[in-house]
Length: 491
Image (tube, rainbow, N blue to C red; front, side, top):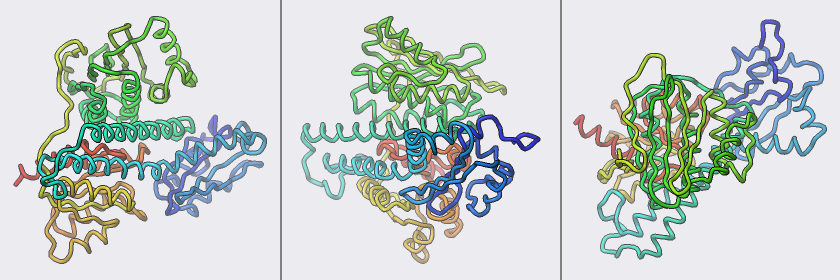
């Protein structure tokens, strides 16, 4: 809102959008909502609808407020008045339908990810049973004495895993694109160390490349950059999705190099490469100011990367040579407080660099408390951790967890919790409350299907490692092994 109380440019054009979760608490809003009178003090995470009622009392004549229920619980509250937003609601049914569908998809994305998360974890458990071994390396209870799976069963399992990862990428990409176009993406610029981002990318992407028979390497880099870490990760995920789609064999390398005041984060892949005409067309599509892009030239992953890069003020570049491969790069400003030099970047034809494989430590015999309010995901997590030989205590809330741990309980070695739990509770608070009740400092791991930058920033500031649903089983095992390893070193 300006000093005169007028709406900012665009507020009347698209309308304010507020998203409420299943507990009728505010979870997200767009820039137009921030332009409403009083928004500065009223728009806070978890606010109730009645608390926000004053926002809508001073709307100009002709503006309306409409609530659209969500199938998974909660609703979207939207204002409409003059401009294109009005035409979409009253005069253009097709535009209204498309706009509403996009917003409903965005608001319900958390629920869409839950069955995907359960399926991904169950595939990991099935993999151990087919091999007759636990993923950690020891014999599973169900598989002692059984023969390894035949190659055909292994190929089917790999194909199922690739299909789940592809579906995950499409859900993530469509959701983020809708949020971007609706103005719901609010960059939170900080000075993250690039190596943390690269490590998370390695954990997430390594199993996907391995499933395609591709060698994937990540070169460490200690530089700090001025960006939103979550959104930069989504740009790199768009690069990886595109690379998985177009690389049939060989290797892929993710690394960095300095360029003036910027840091170039580059993804190199071997393969067919692009002809000069194809490369020119792709560069033109990447430079489109509206980011629309021709689906036959630029797929969802790159289209999303383009939109996010524009939102952050970063620049994308592409280079390719027929028969040699392709390079995708994002140029990110280095943080003003200075940083260490990145290591020299090795192209795919050079040394292997740091291999992004997942640690293979044994996690069996660990006592793990899992807090997850979705029954499918809770059951799948229990099955996978049990397959690895963990003793699992599963609960859908803090109260249920304390009840199942029992009086005078043995302190768990690790707590894994969903970020968004029932009511006003979240996983960060849940882990801390369990630790307080047991008079112990517990290592924790947060799982989430949420991509709201504010929620993700809160999770990262908590100090607990964060994995996104649907999480790859090998990435989960690596995180569990590292956390258990730290505790063993302490003791």
